[in-house]
Amino acid sequence: MTAPADRIPAAPASASATPSAGAPAGDGPPADGPPGARLGAGVWVALGIVYVVWGSTYLAIRIALETMPSFLSAAARFLTAGLLLAGFVAVRHGPSALRVDLRQLGSAALVGGLLLTGGNGLVVLGENSIPSGLAALLVAAVPLWMVLLTAAGGDRPKRAELAGVLLGLVGLGVLSAPAIGGDIAPVGVIAVIVATVTWALGSFASKRIRMPANVFTSSAYQMLAGGLGNTLIGLARGEEHGLRLGDVSTRSWLALGCLVVFGSLVAFTAYAWLLRSAPLTLVATYAYVNPVVAVLLGWLVLSEPLTGPTLLGGAIVVAGVCLVVSVSRSPGRPSRRRSAGRSAR
Image 1: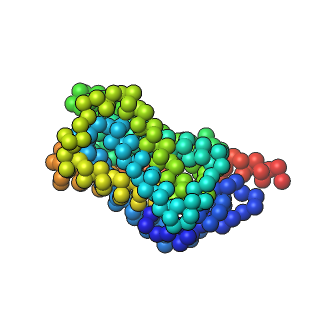
Image 2: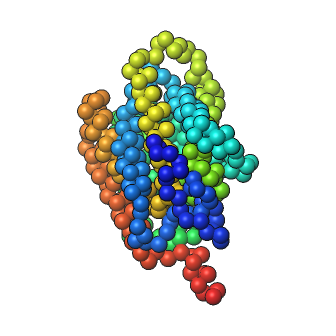
Image 3: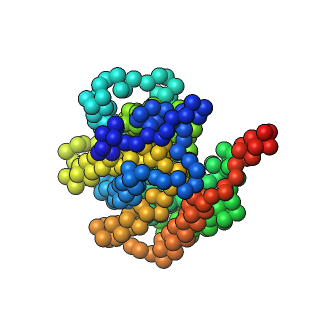
């Protein structure tokens, strides 16, 4: 984010709470507070950034891939952004702000690997063979996996939430139909669907394990870990063979620059902060705004076709996600753990 870390509101500290993913002012409880709790202006600004900027990154990825390899381009993006963000933290708050214990470092590396290697790296791989708009529509399924993960963590989903998950899965089936029929490469669709699962796992884990206390420090380590993971996979795939920087087009360099500055430094940091400062279900709403932005940009800039399955499947997925999010934000959602605690008392 562009605001200094000391100006970002932190969740209130609690002596009995599990440490949060790292509000800048210190550790606090996860931000899944009571329904209807008032959210600060910073939350809505961060959401707006994630809504718009991440919607445009699908187009930037597609343009970068015109002359760049998949995982190595993702590695360049996150290693560069991670180093720049770490430098900002050191200059702004002093080198001591980068100090973390091994547990926090391991947590940041785990989340970074899930989000940026498994999640973003596989999206980049998938966009080699499928339109950017279709990739964004597939990624819209992330909140559906979050519902299932939250259920596994002890919260009983409502029937309407389960209905939203089923509706979203039907939409994924419609979106995947062209791959089954041979119109688009199945590997691209599969890669992006797997990416949605790993991204949901990373988002879920970040709210339940001890992360570095400073959101910028945490984001920097996540990006460095994700960049290293993408580098190792890219080298294992042999992407460095035949790669000549002189053959990379200006258009691809500019796209990569946008991904570093806006997609990573600005939007990813905003997302990392939101994961600890706002309810997870509210954060997940980005997943039905991003596809609209991505599909429109792909159609306008790259002339990507708006096929029947894409429009129908996308509408079904977005409807399912809307149902899940609207129900998840309503009061009265029971938790197995809370119910058990009440009965014990």
